[in-house]
Length: 373
Image (cartoon, rainbow, N blue to C red):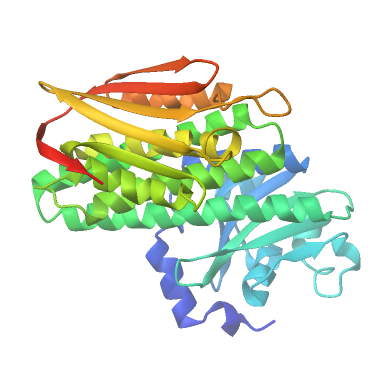
């Protein structure tokens, strides 16, 4: 292996731009390595970032000794460098018999025998490092192991991308003190919410595949909120109908659709993220169990009374072959209630034999006119 591969200027520039090397531990990354270790039943999980001299552990679970304390090793102890150079998954059942790895000092000093590593890419495609699973005894990795780790790697990549975008926003906002305070508040709330989503998803998932899929989808909903905020004007805000159109049009089809109607409402930045999560959860549940799955129509309307908004989601429901309706799971209900609390509002779900109606109430800054989309 040539160190020049690791020292490619474009790759190192992307690694530097990510601002992850030598950064302190962060709970959103630590939760993922903990889940990888538990889900795959391995001794160690790492989020490893590789430059031309060393590998730095942005997160680790199960590692001990000097490497854990230092949060890094030289390349003499790195399997993850091979993932970076190859730009693809590295699957090793027993490193002691691997022609390129059998002399790696990680075998002796870190008890690495079995290794599965997924590349972690920057938004522009440069491989920054690896999300890996390590075991101290030989192990044949299954297709399910590889698929699960790939899903978790996708969550790490999205988290890195959101983190970079948030830090860029803070850097720009620092040019103006008032904007700096606002962006800093948003970033803290975004990452606190990301941690909550990971923890709640873990509790609500019945399988590793369900967990990884739910995590990716909910992080995408969080990213949609971030994108909407990034594109909005601080002065004009984000209009409720436009936000609903942005979020829910992907769920519509030729046989099932979503209609919405209500007055023009300019949302505050604080209201956008919980509404994104709320609509995502309702639409996902409907697509899995309710009206959108059964080619029916969802109706959304909202009204204003003084400074209060009342938002209604209504869809026809019917039991399926297994007896389920579109009722949200225990976790889904937790997320809906969390979204309502973040809106400083309340939520009520009313069920009949033929319909589900969800009513959300919250305060709003200003509104005018009526618009039908």
